[in-house]
Image (cartoon, rainbow, N blue to C red):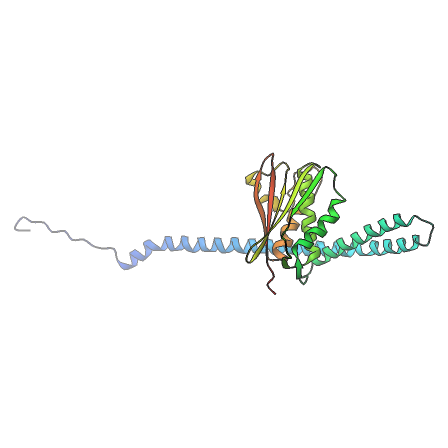
Amino acid sequence: MEDGTFQYVYYDDSIILKRLLIYPYAQLTVVFVFIVIAFLALASTKKAEQNKVWVGLSKETAHQLGTPISSLIAWVEYLRTKDIDPSLLNEMEKDVKRLETIAERFSKIGSNPDPVPVDINNSIRSALSYMSTRISAKVKIYTHLTDGPVPVLMNDSLFAWVIENLTKNAVDAMEGQGEITFQVEERDKVVRIDVTDTGKGIAKSKFKTVFNPGYTTKKRGWGLGLSLVKRIIESYHGGKIFVKNSEVGKGTTFRIELRKYKG
């Protein structure tokens, strides 16, 4: 200017230009949201497909077991008419009834079994009574149950399957010798069942992986035991099961949490 001072003229970006500058970020946000939605949809679809496989496999297994079991029952009754040791026939009948129970459990997995109030202590005792005669004498089972009954809304047959599978899993982890402890703890709204073994333990990185279908450390086995346990507890009983703690070389504790029945 004439007096020697300077003036600067600043042209701000137009509103349209500002919007254009923001546009790429908006696009990235939209893309990110779509990726998240697609991932969730894929996960949901995968879970639905897994559920269909479980249900289909369970129903087919129950169906396939039905005919041979009926034949076995007929054969046992026929053998009773012959001069055969009754004690042997009684043992055969027990095994056939066991097969009936297994078939019934598979049929329940493929349906929606109606839960009823059951004392958790009695359910555990009953399942362990069966298992104790079918495991090594080198395995000791201890129970720390509550003094009084603790009612839980459940399907007793399926829950017994959980206890049996956890017991088998512990026996395998201990390679046929050691101690398994079942402890029941009653809280205000939930019941906790801790199952502790003195086996080889689980690495912390595997705490969640052990429940995946197909996961196994055995040379023989399908790795469905713990996956089935998780499905029964969470999908059919609305509870939780997880590895509470584990130390490699010392043992593992699985914890089950179920809602108490208030009546």
